[in-house]
Image 1 (cartoon, rainbow, N blue to C red):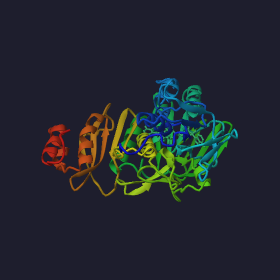
Image 2 (spheres, rainbow, N blue to C red; image 1 turned 30 degrees about the vertical axis):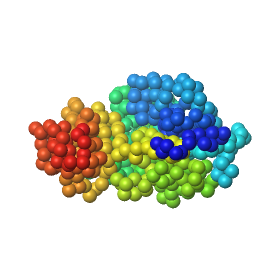
Image 3 (tube, rainbow, N blue to C red; image 1 turned 90 degrees about the vertical axis):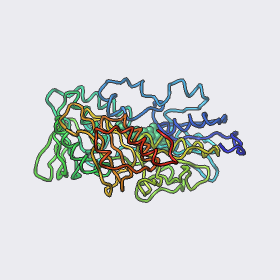
Image 4 (spheres, protein in one colour; image 1 turned 180 degrees about the horizontal axis):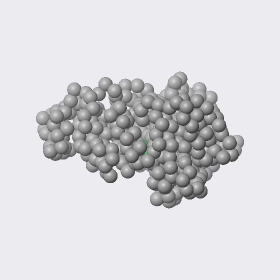
Amino acid sequence: MSADTPLNDSAAKPILIIGAGQAGATAAATLRQLGHTGGIVMLGSEAHAPYERPPLSKSVLSGEQADHEIGVHPTAFYDENTIDLHLGRTIASLDVAASVAHDSAGETIAYSHCLIATGGTARELPELPAGTPGVHYIRSLDDARGLRAALAALPAGETVLVIGGGFLGLETASTALTLGRRVVLVEAGSRLLERAVPPALSEWLSARARHAGVDLRLGRRIAKLTHTPDGTSLMLDDGAEVSASLTVVAIGLVPDTALADAAGIAVHPVNRGVRIDAQCRTNIANVFAAGDCASQFQPLFKQEMRMESWQSANEQARLAAAAMLGVDTAPQAVPWFWTDQFGCNFQMLGAYDPALDYILRGNADPDAAAPKFLLLGLDNGHLRHGIAVNAGGDLRQLRVLIEKDLPCAPAALQDTTLNLRQLVRDAVAASPAAPLP
Ligand SMILES: Cc1cc2nc3c(=O)[nH]c(=O)nc-3n(C[C@H](O)[C@H](O)[C@H](O)COP(=O)(O)OP(=O)(O)OC[C@H]3O[C@@H](n4cnc5c(N)ncnc54)[C@H](O)[C@@H]3O)c2cc1C
């Protein structure tokens, strides 16, 4: 914290948070943790207080976790921390020159600083717009409730068609299988998760999904789509036909940045995210952005991108809150992402890069009940990308190797008779500057 910067120097006007989701709720909490005692106003379009989205395709969809258990903070948090939370209210326009926002009810809110944390909307298939009977998208709690009810009502033996083999499509397919449904998944890419994981893991995951029971149509484009009250029928580009009364479309996210764009805030021409610097500032001095709607240069990926992850939403919110208050804070953590599917917990640290040499540690039998292994992406013996499958406990060690940029012999990393913790301790000991993990 910089001692000479007064907190709350613009306390008369509140800090406005647009979007009551993961990033918005984390920013509000961070502002209070950092000592901000001035006003915080948070508006969210949805009727629900900020909640975690990851369970929507997993435990909430399966019914294992109750809807009320997924709040980002306990319900009382907002009152206890004097956060002025308005639900079911949308900011319709921003006047950044005057530092005021206008909401859909016609009210005007003057702000000292503003955080745009508007997330995004599920990308729609033009032939199956949201609201089409029997067709589901999965972005919000209301979406998850609708899909959960539809899965429960699906007659035994009928098929769920999942269009899109990204993280969301795969998780939804996995959950539908655990609920005893048949699943056909159509993915246009030649391999699963092409931009996120190396080919070896894509192949492994395909085998795992098929072993679990998914009828996986990989590398298949939709040649013809017909929708009737009975469901969706696809003709694929190999001539195969697929029909289902229940369809889930999971083909990506469109960031909600029209508000920023209309206000003259810089938006990336390709990924459509609000452009932010390392402190999450936009091109307007007192306007910040965080989460799925934000586009930021990612040093590990060597490019500007929208991260679309729980951790990134939290990290950017933390950095934005600190920057608003003029407080020094720890730099952004190494990217971390997790997904749960087909009986496996995948955790990924760092960034996928096709130029890395990937090595395997452990036994990667896709048919095993609970396979456990690491896939490690190395650049000349330096770990850049660590993937832990049912081995989240090893992440702490991998984090040390990545954060300290310590070299480690690939042969030693592959040798499961050698203790990983000891290997990392040895690597740290060989590097005088790095403290022991
Ligand atoms: C089903 C699902 C599963 C996921 N699983 C994982 C996972 O396993 N691991 C992982 O790392 N990440 C996962 N994610 C991603 C993660 O949840 C998101 O990256 C994170 O929620 C992004 O937070 P956010 O605050 O940017 O957006 P959101 O949480 O979407 O919040 C944005 C909020 O802003 C509101 N809003 C938009 N415009 C306005 C406006 N003009 N005025 C007022 N309010 C507005 C929206 O209604 C929304 O409520 C998952 C996401 C989904 C949907």
